Image (tube, rainbow, N blue to C red; front, side):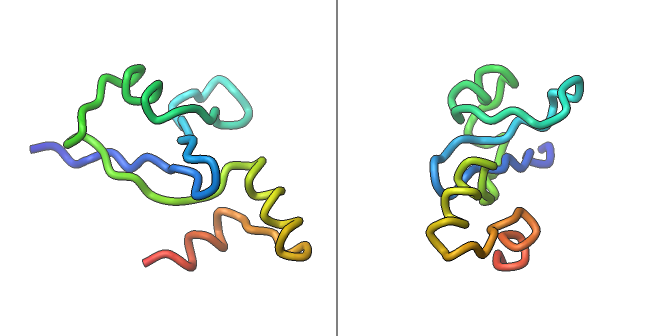
Length: 79
């Protein structure tokens, strides 16, 4: 049995981050279905871990009165 891959998924929009695209400055965000198809993964091959994409981070920051929700803050709140 192989170790499952952890896929960061946005808590706001449910898009996932694709860190495998190393040729770009910023990681890409897209649907889980597209990610699974691109990387040929099935349900037992991955686990989801929650974070915020850049656009949802900005949106929720405005809603929370300017308190930015960064991946570091989100990670510190998870178990």
